[in-house]
Amino acid sequence: INWNETTEGVTLDGYSLMQYLLTDGEATTYDEPKVYDDFDAVEDRPNYVMSQFHGDNIHLSWFLLRQDEYKYVVYGSGKEVTPRLYNMANDPDEMIDLAMNESYASKIQSMDKILRSIVDYPSVSENVESYNKESYVLWKNSFKNQTQFNETITSNQIRWYESWKYDSDGCYEALDEWLKTPNDTFFWAF
Image 1 (tube, rainbow, N blue to C red):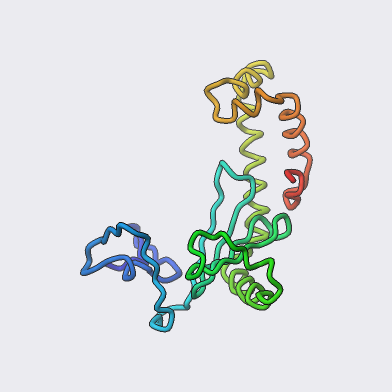
Image 2: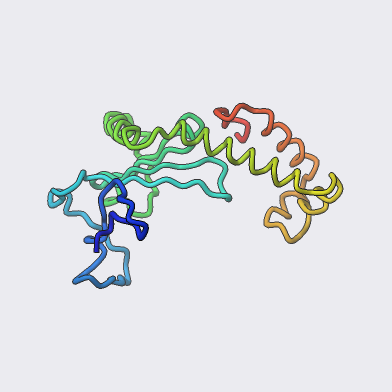
């Protein structure tokens, strides 16, 4: 199977990790998390993996780079929240943030440079923020009137019901302020 090609025949950039997950072409299920730590054995691709997340339950996008035993995480444009660095071999539960330790400054700089060579995460975060605002405005404008919108957004059928019930006036104010901020400004939430 060519894992870098889609069913539409489009070739994807990047490298397949399936060889590290499959045994004899069959998916393997592990009772415990499998940690691949033979970093010197990787010769057919760069020794790092990048991932990103843009979800509905977290305000900021996050971007992740795993290289050797280190995991580097950046939120938003990288300015809103201090980036995180973990040693996954020594700290698989990510309890010790090495980014706070000055002796890891060069590792953080190196990993950030690699991450930025793969994705311009500040620009992607800005685009996601713009999309979120545009989507919210379209959704809000889909209601017949403000009363219908207010009834829907405070309904107990919506997942944020509890926080809206607690301070609905504050929530409306926060949304109004959010819509006024430039898309490259993520500080409104902090």
